[in-house]
Image (cartoon, rainbow, N blue to C red; front, side, top):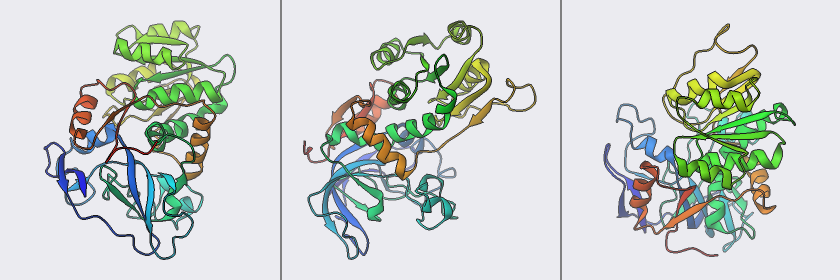
Length: 348
């Protein structure tokens, strides 16, 4: 079968032929109908061999996956061949305290979370081997191309926003830094579950227009005046929650400069920014969190938001042959929303 692999450190992803996997005991083989392209993949391909934590290359990319069940192993009987499914990505051990609560994104096993496309062969291929059927949820009538990025862009944004929702009542303010794949999902989620005023910040004019298109109340250029502008919009009090989907030094400092007393700073982006914390370094009782992905129950919840029409991921599609171009466009900031690869076409 065809697969897109990262084969050498510092290289570009390459399309290669690899053996089609077989479903063993407890496993499910899916025929991939859609696979999302993510900044996390670019991060993986930017680190040195010394910094890479997941074993030897090559790595088949793709940790956002939708597909159709093609085969099931012994003991995996919940889904039938032909069922359309979404794949929950942060695969944990399934046995620790966190995993038993569905929070596999915070698995406490020494091996940690081992997602497909990051620590195991991923979804940028014609077939994906899923380690356990608990990592699948029914796709139902959702379009796999539209829905696939719910498994990361949607889920990660939902997990970040949901924890801060109690601070985002009427008259409160939420700031979303970075109106890309995750940021545009977060804006819609905030509008769906909170009455707070949503302020988007980005350095690109087209992304600011995009933010307004998906529901932001205000769009602020990420220039030297950004902090002052945000403070003016909040009446000088600051924002009750800031969701930084970039994570650069500039953006975390912006977050620290506009957070209100008792506000939340939520750093989701994988950039290298660092924010000092300590007495009087931030307003009193401000919190700084760095969440990771989301839980299995939350994937069901974010999928229901999509079914109800509250969340729609903006996508542009590519064939598996053209997947390297999708990564090039993502790296240049040209993707509006999320890029999605459709190996072998897509069942709609």
